[in-house]
Amino acid sequence: MNASPAQRAALLAAARGLTDARLNVGTAGNASLRLARGFLVTPSGMAAEACTPNDMVEVDRDGSAGGRRAPSSEWQLHRDIYAAFPAAGAVLHAHSPFATALACQRREIPPFHYMIARFGGSTVRCAPYATFGTQALSDAAVAALQDRSACLLANHGMVVHGRDPAHALALAIEFETLCEQYWRSCQLGPPALLSAAEMAEVVERFRWYGKPQASGGR
Image (cartoon, rainbow, N blue to C red; front, side, top):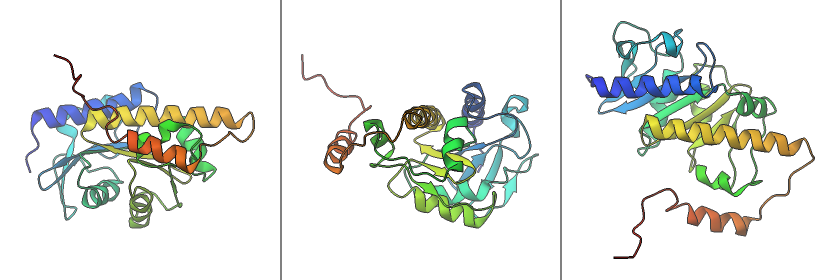
């Protein structure tokens, strides 16, 4: 597979970005990017700040790994997301404070804010609980991510996927912000929710949201 130095550096930057944004602490969480015949993933048991680009681990589609480190214990989760979602170029998993708090309540995030549509639908699902590093967890996450780019993992944390590591990191930060806003709103009582029609309109608008647009001028 032979990941390039640029790919290794980009993945490490995203992993460190999760720590810098306080979405992960210590060795929690993991990150990966898609390669032509597999993926590059952060190593097992190492904090991002202690890693170098050469510590990133190449994993083939069959799960065989190469390099000087063992891959993250969640490597199956990353492999199966890439197999299920061809548009996914990078996957990030974090134990961020507010997403994890909601995941421990096993709550789907409802349409309390229109920015929920940023992640592909009118809700963000919470996958059922399964032990970390197992096929059951991977299967549950893939199901929760259908038509979505983010989900919660019950009693665990969050998963997001994006075009590349930088994009996935931006989505993870944005998702954690939404989780915080939902958590804070719930302290005042059940939030007012947008209707199915209102969310359908927003989801349609998000088909072009955040993409460069021609001004129409000269």
